[in-house]
Each structure stands twice: as structure tokens, then as C-alpha cells.
Length: 369
Image (tube, rainbow, N blue to C red):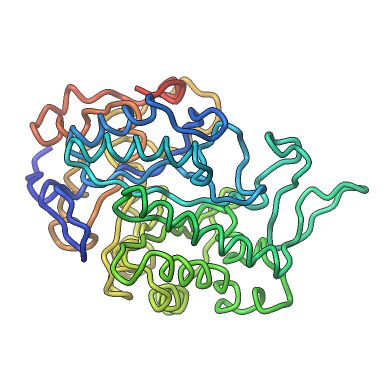
């Protein structure tokens, strides 16, 4: 690697959020929180990344306070005294080493399956009803359901601020609840939440507005979105810059401060005729800071590891990433699998110890290292 890494370790400030580097730990589901409560092992896991130079940790998705929000009893939640006490320990550990941390607030929507503990009789919730025989597999959300979810996000954000988190991120990507409303493939509603792009974005806007009201005018709200979906990797919410601007503008007006722009490969241009990636276009269209993400630091994309495989992802050159960061295409860089397997990744990059960086294999998902 020949590019200067200085820009990656430059401070970043937006409002009250000041980071000591441009490196963000991407949110990655780990399922090491029995009954939804993060323990000391989770606190130590995040602390190790912060003390090695990660500027902002975005936690694994942590579910808001409605019965259908989760799809595993081992996914952490951000409601209930026991879970909030666990997260307070995480926050304190990260702050003790000079890091900053934001929870990713999450509702899994229709990806939940019947039989999921602790509420085994609760089906998935989503924009559309799905029935098999006499069994409701997915409950089509009513207005009352939507109101409950909006309030649950707002309460989670208020609680997050109260226990010391430095920002919150709303999970609007990858085919989960908010994204299910965004995407025509999963939202054929005929009420005010379906049809036009504006209507399909209404749930997100209502959540953002409620969160903003709950946390006040200056508290940072990050919003993560993706064009691709788990159901369709080629899906496009906005296939042109004009439609992307139409999609993003209401989110900005509702109160988003920073956009976390999820791609499978950060180096791929978003639209023909421009080298800008999704984060680059989002920053250009909104004027807001952006986080780029997508196979940073490794030679293969993460989707290859969602099935059983012996494949190993080796360290990749960061030169292109650093050039783009230097040019201002995006403001922050989220790192995923490379940080799962190697908590010292940031320090090793800063010190030029590239040959010491650990390769990633699926085995790394089996423990909190």
C-alpha cells in the first residue's frame, strides 16, 4: 500500500460529535447477548476496537421495544432495565478509552419467523400480510401497529441518549422493516404508506421525526440505507440520481444528520457516467456527511460468508479508499469483517503493519474476540 493513511486518522466533527479518526465500526449482528442483554464480554469486545483507534463504533443491531422486533433471543435489545444496564457498561467501557459509540436501532420486520423466543406466537410484522393456510406468517401492520413502532424507536433513542450513547443509528437497510416499506418489492399497500416513493418513505420519516423530538435538536441521528436487499441483491430503490435525491430529501428534512450508505463493494460506481459511489452521490445530493461501507480492507465481499465456506478473505490494498477519502467523496469509512477478526486492525493500519493484519474466515463469527 502506497497511499498516505493520514486522512483516515484525521479527526471528524459534526455538531457535538467529535471523533478521533474517520474509522467507523460497522454494525454486525453477533448474537452473544442471552435474553437480549449485553454482558461484560460484549463491553470488552467493543472496548478493544475503540482503544485500537476506531473513531465511532456503531453497535450490532439492537431491537426496539415491540414484540415482533427481534428474530433471536440472543440479539441484544435496547429496552428493559436489564438490557439498558448492560448497554450502559458498554458505553462506559468505550468512553474509558476515548471512543465514541452509537447503537443501531432495529426492527427486523417480516424476516422474523413464528416460533422465535421469547414470544413464540408472534409472527413477523411487515407492510403486507402473508398467510399460509390458517397461519399468519407475517402480520400486515395496521395504523396502530405503525404508531407503536414509531414510539418504540423514539423511546429507544431517548433511552440511548440517557445512558450516554453519543449518537443513534436507525437501520433502514437490507430488507428489514423500514426498508420493507421503502421497497416496492415488499410494499404494495394502498394507504398513505404505499404507492409513491414519498408514501413508501413515510414510515421512515415518522420514525426520524419522532426520534428527533425525543433526543432534541443537536443529538446526532445517523440513517443507514441500501439499494440492495437480502431478498434481491440487484434491487434499486433509486436507479437514477434524480430519484435518489427524491428519496433522500424527506429524510434530511425529517432530521437525519449523517447517512450510512451500504454497498456490497464500496469501489463500485452508483450510476453510469460517474465514479462516485453511493456515499459520494448521497453527500453530493444532500450536503450531509456520509459513511461509506462495503468490503473495506478485504479482497472479497461479505455475502460470500453468509453460507458455509472454507474461503478466507485476505487483506486488500486501501489505496483507492484513501484517494477517495482525500478527495472528499465521503467523510467516514465503516469497516466490518476486518474488525470482527482483528480488533487491532486500526492500529495496524496506522502503524503500517499490514502483514500483521489477520485474514477473515467464517470461523471468526463463532466468538467475540
